Image (cartoon, rainbow, N blue to C red; front, top):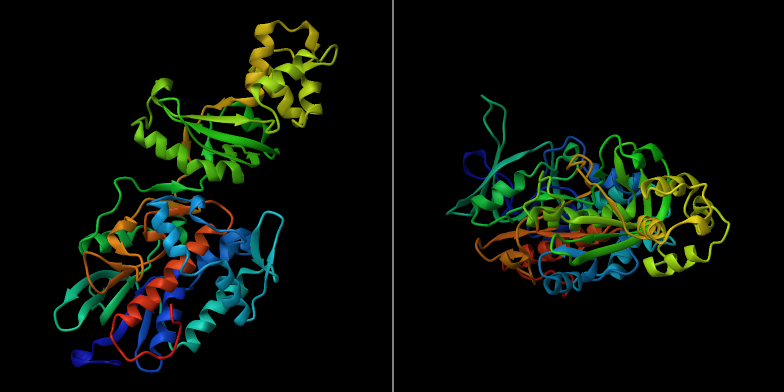
Length: 447
């Protein structure tokens, strides 16, 4: 089925709504499976495709990570995440881009980037693969509604300007790859959730920013250390006292608060606990989760307390600096603990030493908010993974509809994990949609 039908309607076998990373990948694999017997159209509201790909990794695009498993993800069941990731792993991602002329290199962090250090090479490979698979890309073509159509499956209706007749496409199957709400300037504004709901799906009670910088009070002394970077362990303790998550990585002090990989990774867990405690804006610290920073990851409170007890005539600030705390931060920690940084360690009382060791290994940052979806790298929440069939990403509540990428309730750590989720779910959804048409196999991928 292809081309224009009655009343000038466009017709396609598979329509992909959203041509970001997951959508393009789904379109590629659906096109490869159907070409030349079927038609795949990918629709996107952006004038220029791939904005999120182009800004990822500082413009280099962190394509994936060398070691990806379900423990790097939150949201839906990790067992379900594992099953999907197993369908299209890191090795196949590397192979796909290599076949398209994009070699990937592994950095010390485990992140994989294109050797070109240019995200345009990644986007170019995806667009070229889509073209070779016979995919028609239509943009700007913003979808306003997807509704069931008795004669063909689905009718996709454009969100047109007032007074303008909207374009429409009839499709036998639809892949919803609209993304979440992170980086709205790239087109991720949450519109896909309304489409999913209209077709019978639910969306998690909370949809909130993940991999997002956190805010401190404007006058907090850490904000005065803007630009300072150090390795730290950052943990979240729930309102009930349970340790929820911990990450050790680089932390960046900024004029607004805290950022850097350690903060970005821990942010979704802090915000999830904040929502669970119902403490958004509450002033009672006991009802809120705590964000704890160990500025000396090699030390515990006990080991640092013992180190300080042996310090002799060395000053408090100098001791922390010698252990690896940047000097400006060391002075700030002494002040926060109510200790004179220029005082010698042997002059400290037991109580003062405990306060200093606590400030250095379990500093409670007074988080007052986050920078929101505008600065978030990914969205937490979405359509529960339990509402799709993992082997095809087909909806359990709306046959013929497939979902992939960030619209699902799965979000990963920083480091290429969210792109790997896009590749894996896009692959499964693309093949699932194409094969669900019941056309004669093309001899493509067998899994």
